[in-house]
Length: 345
Ligand SMILES: *[C@@H]1O[C@H](CO)[C@@H](O)[C@H](O)[C@H]1NC(C)=O
Ligand SMILES: *[C@@H]1O[C@H](CO)[C@@H](O)[C@H](O)[C@H]1NC(C)=O
Ligand SMILES: *[C@@H]1O[C@H](CO)[C@@H](O)[C@H](O)[C@H]1NC(C)=O
Ligand SMILES: *[C@@H]1O[C@H](CO)[C@@H](O)[C@H](O)[C@H]1NC(C)=O
Image (tube, rainbow, N blue to C red; front, side, top):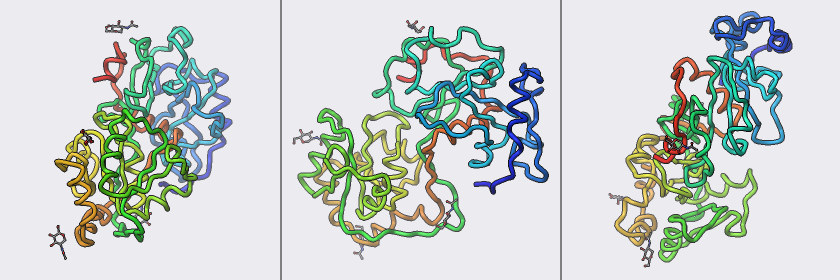
């Protein structure tokens, strides 16, 4: 993260925008935020034009204070002005629609948009848990999802190179744990859990187990297990969630994954950092592999910690700020003709 910078008086940008003192067509003529001395991360000093990103509806009732340059202050992303003020619609470069707060139909959104304004459809859920995309043909220019082929790729987490990283394995007091809030017998993960638990004891937490964990209790709990069942709620290409990144890797436990094929996981994390349910012919074999593993073999799963740290993307402000970083590379003039088909294939 970049060091914090002194803030430009944000009301200047706000006021000039509201008064329409600057042409709104084309980013090149956008106002440059005032440059506070030597700081080059804030306000895009020397780093190009300021983009206005309007979030149509914030996903929670607590809207962050966007009068500050949050993208710069918190994430080191310059030239990115976020707002939820719909009065800025006519001058926004980008308008973001989160799937969870999408209105019922296209009719509830503005009919016209200024030339060059891009609309983003943003969602983190998998197709299995995403309803009502049929009515959104020809609406969005860009998509922001967990899929790597999204215009704006937004994973749940990633490994970032870290030269000062060191291997650190938390003390273990049990073999396997699982945190589950929505248990449905018909899900593959429920069936695998049920069968696996015939061969070994799984420490199970979460709403479904009537042992909910508080927000700050989750990592200290899963970290005490040697292995964690990072079982996705549905199986889709690239759909790899915080169950892997936070509950397992960040916690310092070895993930046993159920999700897309091993080859897909290997596009995100080293092949020797996880165990895939499909690696075994049977769940009995998986159970015996886990139960009989010696400590030198176990330590090998943590080799990644010599070179990487886990970075989580867990905050909508950060996710939306990344749109500005990606913006120069986004394709122009394209609308998704059939969003539902795109997402379901
Ligand atoms: C969206 O586009 C697809 C492909 O052209 C078409 O089959 C579908 O009927 C369209 N949906 C709506 C609601 O217009
Ligand atoms: C790099 O690793 C060190 C040692 O584990 C840690 O303190 C630091 O926060 C890591 N840096 C990042 C960017 O994650
Ligand atoms: C679970 O066990 C049942 C009964 O032995 C078996 O039919 C089923 O295929 C198993 N499922 C998995 C995912 O291993
Ligand atoms: C630990 O397990 C690995 C893999 O099963 C085996 O190759 C190795 O010899 C074992 N090491 C010891 C010290 O038992």
